[in-house]
Structure formats: C-alpha cells, structure tokens
Image (cartoon, rainbow, N blue to C red; front, side, top):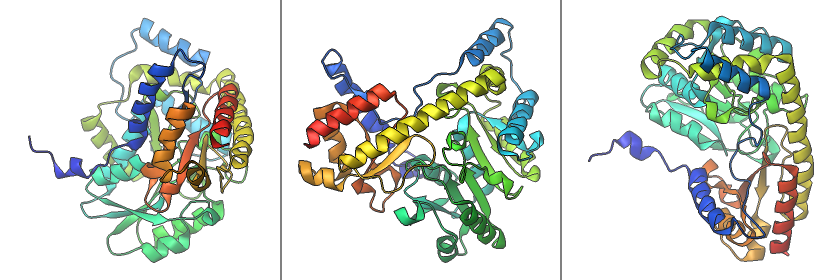
Length: 394
C-alpha cells in the first residue's frame, strides 16, 4: 500500500513511544516496592470537578446528545467570552469564539484555513512537536528558530525579523510553552506581533496553559493586543478535562465562517456531552476549585525545581506557568556514562522506575541535552521521584 508523502513527513511522537515503554516496565514492577512514577505525560492528575461530572451525567439522562452547531453551543461560547472578561479583563465577543474537538482540532482548522503549500511558519526551538506537524499536515513547513535560556526559550522580534522571507506566512507561538513552562514577555510579544502585522502575516498563539500561569507579569492573554491575533485554548489543562477532547479558538471575525465551513466538513461538531459538561466549568464553585488546584501546581513547582537543581539537573529558567521542568541533564549523563537525554530517560525508567521525557521530541537545537519533567503529579509522588533519582545519581 502506498503511503502519502504527507504522512511520511510526520515524525513519530516520541513522548508516546517512551510512554509505551514506561507502561511495559510499570507492569513488571507494579507489585514491587518501587512502582513506576510517571513524570512524562503532560496530563493533570486532577479530574473534572464534581459539578462538571454531574453536568455530563445530567446531559446524558436528558438525551442532550445530538449534534450542536459546528462552532459549538452558543451558551458555551458566551460562557467562555465571560471568562475572558472576568479572568483577564479582555472583551472577546462570543461570535469570535469557535468551540473545537480539543486544541488539536483548533490548530488543524487554523492551519488548513491559513496555510498554503510551501508556506513557512516560524516557531521556537524547543517547542511542542505536534504544533509543527499541524503545519506540515497543511503542506506548510515549520521553521524552528533556536532559542536560549536568556530568551526564556521563546522567539524574539529580532529573530522573527531576521528569519522572515518571501515564503514566511507567520509565527506559531506558545505561552506558556510546552516543554519549558515559560511565557513570552508581554512587550516582546507586542513587538513580535508588530513585525508580523507589518508583513501581512499571521500571529497564531497556543494559550492552552494560560489558566495555569503563576506570575502576574505573564498571566495575560495575547488577545488583549489585537483582534487579529488567533488564540488556541483548551479545556484539558486548567479545566482538567483531557480525555473529554474539548477546546476552542478565538479568531478574527471575518475568519469565523471559513473555520465554520471547515469544521462542518471535518468534524461536524465537538462532543455534545463534553460541551454541556463544560458549561459547569464556569460556575463559581468550579472556578474556586480550579484556583485551588492552580495553587497546588505552583506548590509542586516551587518544591520540584530546586530539588532538581540540587541533583545537578539544572533548570535554567524557572517556569512561570504550566506544569513542566525543562532540565539540562548534561551533568547527569556524564555521571551515569550515558549519551544524551534519550539514553538517560531509559536509565531513569529502568533503574529508578521514574518515567520522564527526553528532549528529542521538542526540536533540534541542543534538545538532546534536556529532559522534560511533568509536575502534574502529587507532591508525594514528586518527593518519591526525587529520592529515587538522588539515590541513582549518587
């Protein structure tokens, strides 16, 4: 059977390959004194809070499971709009919000609507691998621009300007970022957007971790800058609904019918049950619970990052959001005599029963010397992981 060149261009998702290996080891050690600790997958250990679960059950019992509009339930779009106003002080009309089958569907729709064959999209290196594959699936090309700790592992306006050419269509940013947990400094984002707008390009920004910001300087949506920015968001991370597969995008008004037409053909609509459940995310009780959980994520960060640093797994930039630690593992590799983060990840997995993600997935510039830890796990598990790694590295 002949495989399309488009499919052949998509690299494996190594995060999931490591996860499969970790699951296999986990089965072998499940009954041991040191069962596997999973710090490799970016999934909150919290589930949807009670009101959200109850809303889903209620929708099922009442038979609310038919198709919705392709752009999502009007009342859910209104609730999201109100959340932007109350949380960020930004007016985002509900008519510019399109509910999608997860942030992945939103990114696919945006790329299909805006990218032509041969277009190039500038992205930071390191960055989330699937984002560049959405560009490739639309027959565009992601151009990864090396970034440094001094730049918070984010693009700068100067680098965007230097990399821009006749094929450049725009930028795809993430703030806070996966894998680094770092956000773009607001003034720098403003300058980047000005460079893009002056060249008639698009500014597309992944804000799925925005609700999990821990620093007032960075906890602002890019939508405050301009109504031409396209923002991608999700119910997976802050709202703890990963498997519900529900997200949204905010687009310029004139792009809504284009996105709607694509969504009608490719997805019909997002999950109806998930949408009715998500309405309860914005109840006062649910929002209070999400804020309590956000404080817990910050407490985990505040413990785990210094603990990694003490082990020689240096985190060069303190993450200001999300639940990741992007750690330089060069010293640990030298201590254990292994070659790079891929081999080190398997050492941690097999000898300490701690699953982590090697930097291979996230780019090409020096990523082989980094490991991503996910702190979306209990404090007890994080303490245990540090203890095991300390014993190994000693």
